[in-house]
Length: 303
Picture (spheres, one colour):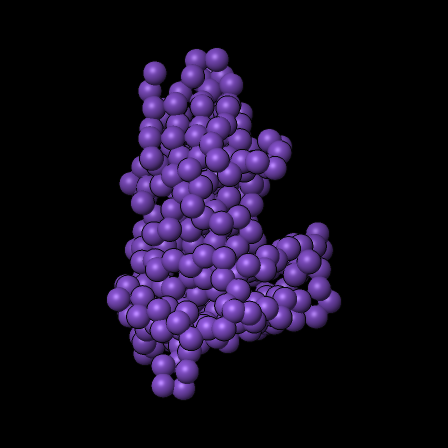
């Protein structure tokens, strides 16, 4: 039976994140730039003849089947195409859940792309993106496959060219509930919209470690979770070696940008060596990651 093994699902960073409005249905309107990094989940897909979608692997404990984006993605593709085959899907999770790195969304997108290939259903990128949007606001960008300037609720994507960069990504021990962030009355919901040309013009003059705009969710998260705010401050370093630190998505993960992995590693080692635990050493895990130009599966889907 046909199979695909070790299929990557990369994490993402939000290089900035502005909340520019809110729709009558309650969805927030956002502007952001997504960048993929080489921290990846991997998934195995084995086609079956009975039409059933089955899942296995570590990291699934406590995740009900009806909330599993991978299962929802597989079933959405079945319904849209009339595919009669099923799949046995195994997860190997490396991206932490609930960190703002998009692991569940990325897994769902990889599932759409991989099963479209495995089942021979032949949907185009645009068709897969239409299936992706109801699964979650971040899912379409992973199908889109390129670093992107995003607007709306995830459906308006424009490819952007980003320079080669590496990142120190930190997962705090404190975890953030996304719904609590978006419900907070103090959340900024009226940031001024920016044009993509403003971002691209800014890029021409910026260097490694400089960030455009801000993450509007940061202030709420830092107020709700003072330990994360202290960690972000500690990650910046000393007066002689200061870097800018930003939160991705709704958190809790934080990141800093560097020219290359060697610089990122040196800064990480210097900061961790000086941290006091507690209060500013509340790190569950961290990674040195390379920014990707494109999604690893970009060639698997026809435009």
